[in-house]
Length: 455
Image 1: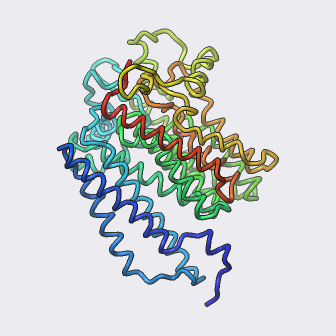
Image 2: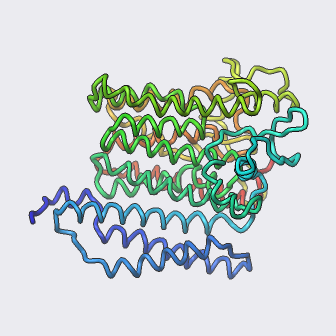
Image 3: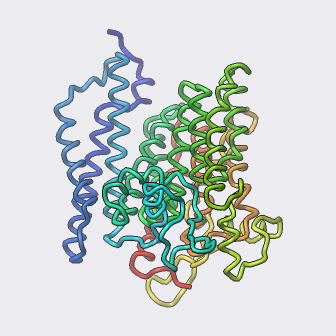
């Protein structure tokens, strides 16, 4: 059995890495439980599950043999997989204990899952849930993938299925996958940790995960599948698998169909796959397209999704074009310039009801401009970020009631890749920007949790 050099050892997770994550999870559990007891709040089932997982996994990790200086492929794979599980446990505890015990009533995906189980596409939609009303039937406005993933749970608990719990688990999976994808780049272990913390606690993925609303779940599921697709691109690069995940991602967020050509370009020009191999990329995208058309036809007897247009016809936006260049200035303003609200009462600075720019929630996204734009891979990843953002830049609404810019969450994995491409080691400025981002998100979550979103 050979040895690995110091640089390789420093760049990959070892058993101690997983123990650090699990110890952090236990610390979050202790602090979270103490705060809940002190405030006399209610515990939730997922609080207890995350606590059991954190404590149990940490204790079990001390029964595993430390293979820090072994180069055996099996040991390296074990340490990597264990670190991914540890990141999942860490963020499961973090999200569950910062989510509170409230259940979000906007559970359109659960209602759609129940409808699928009963063999139809219309849902039982109360007035407070956005839906398209066609005759006697109500149809939800969101893509179908989250509902499909919820079907096993809805088959057991029906409309009592807790969509918030599902959102928290998906959010934790997002971070485990982000950690996994970052491991495909030439990052030091320290840089990989910092970028993972930023992605999970320094972006509005934190807020969207604990919010658990219908729109939020669509976003976090889209992030999960996008990360699976990107992980395959930077791992084995099998066109069939990339095409499958790329297609499925578009069933969580339709905008992501725009990045299919970018996946193909990454496989062709960066992974050097042949034209013949690239034919295997097509079936996954084609199946997603067929599913999209079938879902629309079953509801609207049209190959196109008419739900949002039908819903907006009953609102003040009636008669307005869904996509137009005249909506670009307002969406750009929301994305880059919309500031928080200042007041004379504590906590003095509040999130703005209609959104808040990424520069005032996650300034560390500026690090995406660090990589060299002369590299083909950087240009392709940047194209993926731009194309996935393009539809919402021209959309009639900016996201409405929100913290940050929720319409752009599905773009975050591409921007994270740009940040990873600009680093090997983490510098001081990057640490400062990431720390500031985490503090801004913590402030926003705190304000909304205790004071709501002021109009």
